[in-house]
Amino acid sequence: MVGKNLAKILSGALAACLAVLLSASSRAEPAPPPIVLRAPHEPPGIVRIDMPERVVSVGQLVRAAVYTTSNTASVEARIYGYGMPLQRVGVGYFRFAFRIPEVPFFLKRAWPVQVIARNVDGRRASRRVMIAVQ
Image 1 (tube, helix red, strand yellow):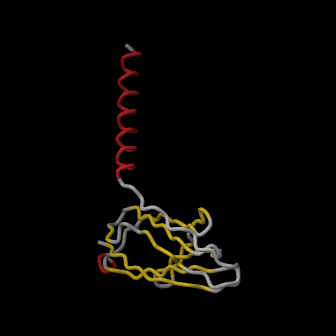
Image 2: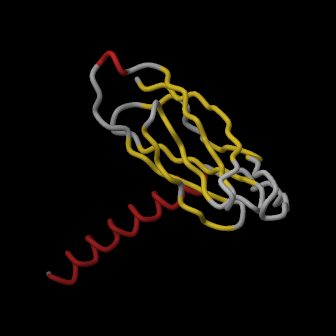
Image 3: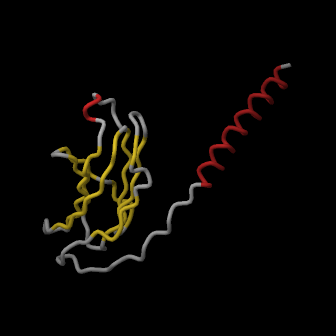
């Protein structure tokens, strides 16, 4: 009896894992751009920002990847004075994940997000993307 129940539980868990893996693999991420090499003291640059979800809802997890020149030491995302550092994953590759918090109805609108890349000298490059909270 215990063996049958355990088999049912395990098969259900395996089916759920398989469904998650299949849904994750069906959303293919775009290939990263080639690394743009720059000397450490040259100005940094933002090559590409991948943020597939630009219209989001409260509670939703927003993910983004930022590709920069090789001399970028840090990347920050800012919304009206509130900044969040991005995790450095590799040379010229940064990412973040952020869950949209509960907000009052009057804050459910489009917001400019300033993405700022800095090199070791503090020189910066920035790009703006829009995100709409529903």
